[in-house]
Image 1: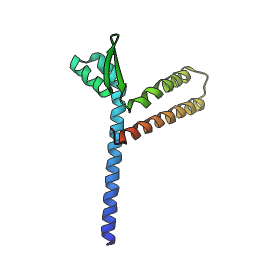
Image 2: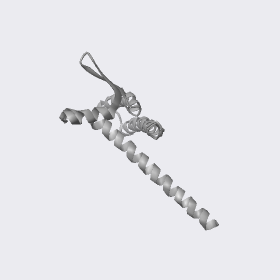
Image 3: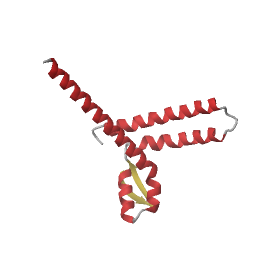
Image 4: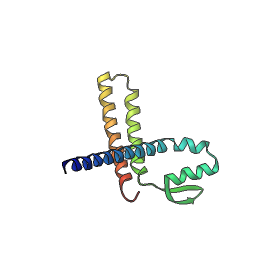
Length: 130
């Protein structure tokens, strides 16, 4: 009976590890997609452009020759946090008066903010609607 319980718990641990690995891979794929979509779009054929756009959202419309897309829910935290983080990074990157310690502290803060965005995206991807 104890052996059965140990086996069952080991299976549960393995299942949880597999789920965590899949979640990490899915999140990584989403961020790579978001980071590269614009550049890929510029180089893509018409059919490839359609596929790229479909991955970004839904409810497409063209108004005044401009494509409007309702962004996928997972894309919203990236869209909202990235410009702020990039501006903060560029601001301290150019500041040559900072010591290495100050620079590392600022970079650490940016990394923590980015980790928060990653966690938010992962939570959205785990939701049953996605």
